[in-house]
Length: 262
Length: 354
Image (cartoon, rainbow over all chains, first blue to last red; front, side):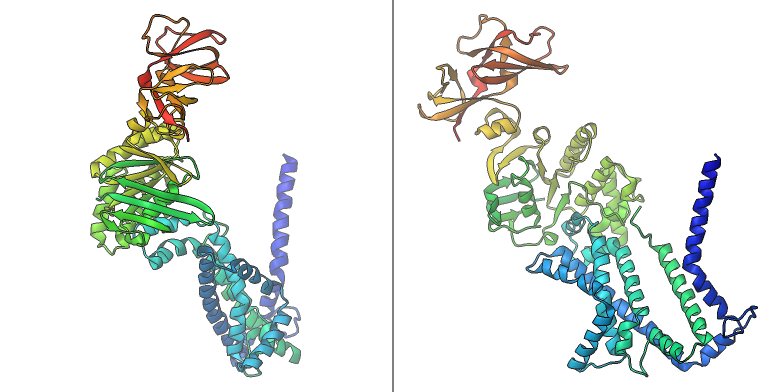
């Protein structure tokens, strides 16, 4: 009895330590965004001054909007293209399919630094140059393999007879896809979309290579700001982003059971 | 409703001939079983009729209309899959109504048609359930209701009872047959279970290596198999091989076996005779029976008691024969006993050597 209770206690302690490890830095940063002292000095004194001054910081605000915009648009494009590609790879046999599938994985392993350099050279070569559009293209390209891998994994659990059954009942290709296949792979599509969003929103390296001083994303802007000198406004904007993205994740988790159908 | 005609159908996958010049006429309103071992082409044939795959050569007609290049969604067929293939994201009612819904039918029409179909398969009150909440037999019924609610011209069944346990399978065989009679739909049924084929169908087609071996009513195929394969695949058969005498065969040891049924063969040709195990009478003495009867002596090597009948394995001249005897409480022969086997020429089918 005593040992069981002790083990249970250890288990709980372990979970709390794990959560602390994950969240403590974030919580401290969030708290400091409400602290009067810009140099992390204690005692803690409550203020919303940094949030107010963040509102005045046009560069940070515009970089945040850029990041949101690029993340949302590139997520939509990558998710749609990636899911469609997964479906095509699932349904059709064609020459060179194996090679094509094998070529989808290396971009995930290639360091972003190298991908970024390559994109910069390429975009200059074809005349796209740097800027938000280049960043958007880059993010779509980075996110695509993730979406395809996640959606394809979900498709592996799909029974092909379901599409055949739908067709035998008179459904055309579009009806089969929208009413039978998509509902089944939706958790995979959502997960792939979250990956795509994370890849874009977190993206620093490739964005750094492709951004211009006026047209930049939040991570690049934060990096630039920190180099000039740290301000608690960074804490403030980070806190907002954490709250928003955690809310998004929790919402998604509520509506879509990850880890398979029960 | 409509009949289905398949003429000279061939389909190859690489070097493998999955279907080789198959022609069958499926009568309107009939219940037809396609029987064969795995890899015989029976499922390929069903998928050709459904339209999931197109033939290399040959014709398929449904209700007189050529359909061999018509895709499945335009063929107006109903199909029940081996694993039912119910849509997991939809309720039972939505599953059944799917075919009507994709045709753009009005919601009230769909609802009443779905209810009718569910009543027909005796699942009237389960429309709100999800497929994973149903038993195997219930899923089977939902799949059937879904396949017939669109009033297809032909119903195709791909080993639909394979996943059910024995008792349930027998229930479903009766049920399926009742529903098929009720709506009078042409039904083509793929199975590897000979008993299922015998009990359910009006006609059976036996396939082997992509070719149609024999086709006809169950009684005809059982009583008059045209090949050793048909004889042994549909039911059990004792096969004797020898030279044709015109009215039977002569075994290598000189014993003559008279056959009154089957092929007409010139004397001297290689031939076989097939006898069903239940047609053979087994006794310990020669007795005083019909002098025309075929007779062989042998020794019981094994007896398997199955309650209502016993199966005897009788060894003779390097061959083991199978004899099934109804349990009348009289003949109980021990293993090792010398016996006499007798059967009439009418029970003996002459078959040309393959």
